[in-house]
Amino acid sequence: YDGDKDEYMCPNGKRLKPLVKSGRRKGKLLRVYRSRQKDCKHCQLRAKCLRYKDAKCRHLTYYADAKGKNISQAMVQKIETQKGRKIYPKRIGIVE
Image (cartoon, rainbow, N blue to C red; front, side):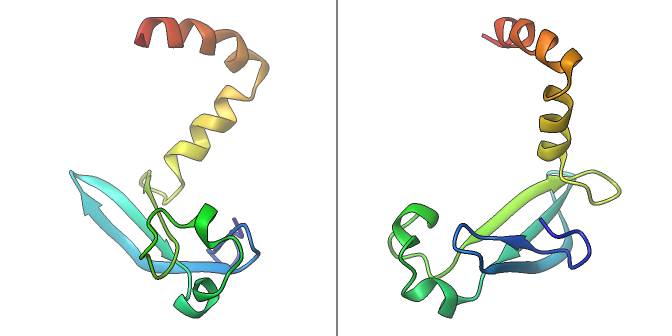
């Protein structure tokens, strides 16, 4: 992710630009990014990168907090701390 440009990079190094600056789904802020169709059309990583064979381009959608920060990335950063590594195994046991 490039915070200065507000863009993500695909596995082949192409840019995913914001399609929708902000939207809402089920009351949560939603961010959507999309690649260009011409970048995906003949890409060698197409089968691994795109969810469906007939998809024209890569989409990345995530829920964001009020400041627009990716909620999933924030959780990964918490888990990667020393404290997070101790708590996470207990949390998995509770969920299951």
